[in-house]
Image 1 (cartoon, rainbow, N blue to C red):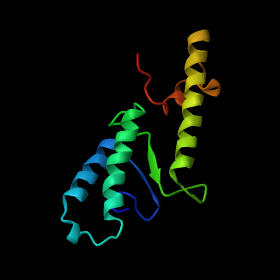
Image 2: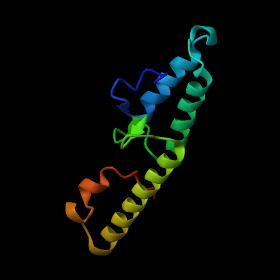
Image 3: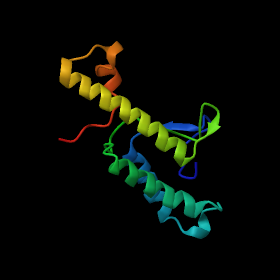
Length: 123
């Protein structure tokens, strides 16, 4: 990627705080020194993604995120990403509600292992 995080595999797993740091370093460079026609896009995108994840209450130190260019062989655009997040959050919401009703769940019911990938609930 322009920030130097996504490698040859096309994906990167790391915390939003690392993306924020990489974005700050990238955006602090003189624009003339960045040999990319996507410099503005990369600079804005890094700040936008970090802010969006914070708005979704994803902790800055979360290591549960994988960033990538493709998912299932298809290019990832924001609508697909938003839909994937919505479906994951819906699964997490169901797991939390079930836990309130019946107590601790087993893994096959969406218990602790499934909830490990859920954003932390406020409250």
